[in-house]
Image (cartoon, rainbow, N blue to C red; front, side, top):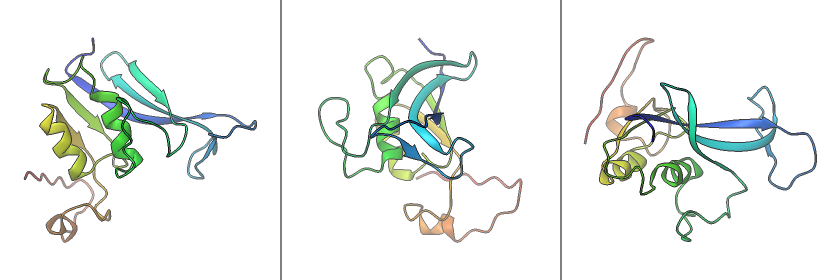
Length: 144
């Protein structure tokens, strides 16, 4: 079992062959490859669980489709909302691609803590946060 703090991230495994689920992300060093989502324990660096992203139409855990949720939200919930972790006081750390108020509320509903950097230009971010101007090194905390 992982320690109290867990981290969710994505990785692109280089693959140049023909494959239907191959992703292209121009900003990455390996632009073409297979996208893998991980939940890791930061202290040891071990991956606790992962899944390979096969496309937007894939079925989620439990058989229901999360088509109304963005893949950044659905991937976190697929990885951490499992019986081994729910209600045990875990804190999920993530980067700005995953962070959204909707995801944080869902994690809080399942007794998870959540911490992550935020892209203030996303449309799901509250207007009072978007109106703030921040300099490098500034920290802003928001609770609802």
